Amino acid sequence: MQILNLNMRLLPIYLQPTKTEKLDSSWLYDRTSQVIYSRRTEARGKTYGLDYLHLDYSPDALRTARGLDASDPIQRAYTQVTPIPEVDSILSRIIANQPTPYDKVRAIHAYFSADNGFKYSLKTEPGTSGNAIVDFLRNKQGFCEQYSAAMAWLVRAAGIPSRVAFGYSRGTRSGDTWTLSNRNLHAWTEVYFDKFGWVPFDATPASFVSGVDSAWAPDPNKVDSAPGGSVSGGNVPGGPPTGPGASPGANGNLPNERADNPSGALNGGTGSPTWPLWTLVAILVLLALLAAPGIWRYRLRRRRWPSVSAGPKPVPVTVAPGSPEMVVTDDGTHGRARQRAHAAWDELVDTLTDHRMSVDVSATPRMTAERVITVASLTGGSATGARTLGHAEERARYARTPLDDDDLAGALRDVRTAIAGRVSWQTRVRALLMPPSVVERWRAAAGQVIGRWTDTVIRWRARVAAVASPTRFLRRRTS
Image 1 (spheres, rainbow, N blue to C red):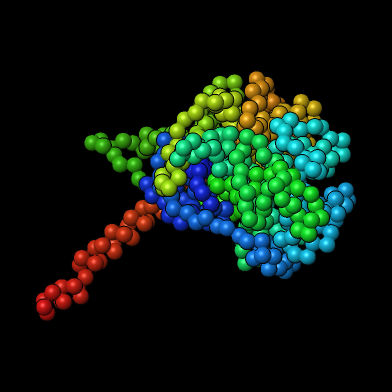
Image 2 (cartoon, rainbow, N blue to C red):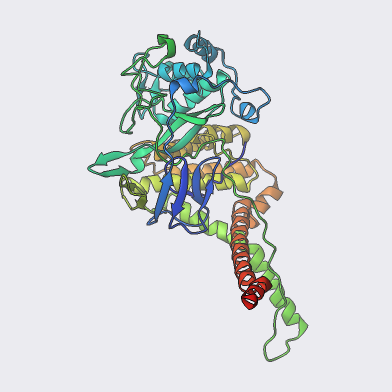
């Protein structure tokens, strides 16, 4: 599974973009995950144009899609789940007698309905099974992240490729203007059908997130959405969310180009200094270069630390239908609490990277926190701190009201100390002097600079060749 860089900035876009305007070369588009991203440019205050395709699918067409071969890379990558007897028992009842992959997905989609006891809530009930999916299917209460993950799990257990996508719902309408804000951050499920690609399904019951019916995933509260009428309906905002599809499991990596290390001779002035002075200067420059990543990482940690981080406000988006432009503006709603949670989470992710612990960004914050607890063998206060950080990031991403916890700094400190105590002293020294989180960012930035300069040289060389072409002069002389 490819891993996304959590430090990338994403622009709000519609699915299937075909053309953009007013974006410089620092913004790149990944066709697999359908995101426009940058590693160094902020989205705040950005104005840009966008053309996109609006895709629609008919149920009859989707029923023609057949299952993928077991050797297909998508089938192998997006159907992996751990067998759970209770979940498999529920699934067998849901998809019984469903003839096609699409009919099975429709039956699973309709299962998350009010008639089956499911409801939307920002507060989840604690479970006793020891498994988050089992607890959710028992309690039948949660928010978009849990609904999308649960549906993706059931679809995968049925042998059909699926993934969880993150972005924006459609927003709210006022006259001719659609408004998107942090309240429209949303998660949904995408299912892969042969010859159709990734098709969105939203199993989350309607709440403050706006949704619309779609032909292939209608609101089961209005119609019997289960094929054959075997499963009752529910209150679901159907239709594909219109926003950035930052999907887990999708490839969002830039080529990690390595820039050559800067080098060159030191040029003297009017005098001729003795060689000890040159040696001292060279040593000081070398030490400064070696210390730069560690100093940068220290300053970044200071800015992020929850006890001092106020940070920028979240960025809602206003979209006028029929107009290709989006304008990103500021909105102070719960900005400080969300920024503190995001900053603490970014610091945790960089800490894991620095200490050579892999981070799967396709996982939810809660799953990442539990994985950190397992891999680093955290116990007591450090385990509680990891769960607190995961819960705060989860609320900051998806909940209407973020978690305003004054103990984030203490939780982060406990987790950092525990992680550092689980690795070798060589890894701790490397994390202090040459932190991988900083080095990789600098390498990627250097690769982008080299790429832009290369493109510029190629364009100028083509222009010079066109002006100075011998054929052009011969043609003019002949005429």
